[in-house]
Length: 271
Image 1 (spheres, rainbow, N blue to C red):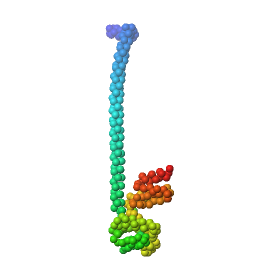
Image 2 (image 1 turned 30 degrees about the vertical axis):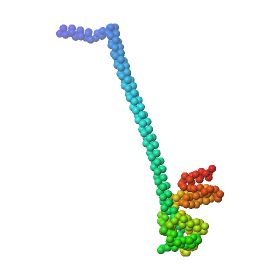
Image 3 (image 1 turned 135 degrees about the vertical axis):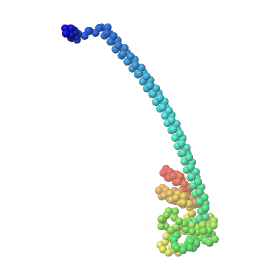
Image 4 (image 1 turned 60 degrees about the vertical axis):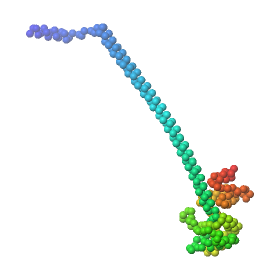
């Protein structure tokens, strides 16, 4: 029991004693350890930063290469697109020119096939009408001799525009162009022809004799008349299937063969 008390006293004496002070050597050792750790950490950070910087630099280089490649491809695409557009435009222009030339050629052939025709407009329609008799009455009214042997065919033609209330025009085809021209010349000298002069009952209506024009030429003639009214030109008429315009009584006749000639006429009048 006395021995236990002695051990207890020693233990209490040991636990209550203050810790030994840290020596300067240990403190310096600790500082050195911290410095080494910090140096290693800075070195590793510099290596990581250098590696990261190199990666970023490589990435920028790759991005620059991609951008250059994209720019080259874009320029190549734009050049190819321009080439395709130019070819398409050229092909379109050539197609339009060829189509225009073909249409002009067809119109010329159609007009040539009508060169012995007279178009008679404004004659009222009657059931079981005698068109040859009507032509004979016209010939008598304009004082032009006519025989059935001069005539190849005569018939009415449908309207170009559906729904028109006007009488269908009559087409008379003669054996020669001279006969066609002679009957038109006699009509122009008469200056006026009405349905009652042909023995047709009802309200008198004006009757016109013209060269038989193609639809394309009729459309051009309509535009030409509108332009003549707009520009206050003096005369517009047809001679040998050609549209002619005279600005004044004394000015030379101008041939209108297309809309380009109408534009030239407009520009000339505006000067």
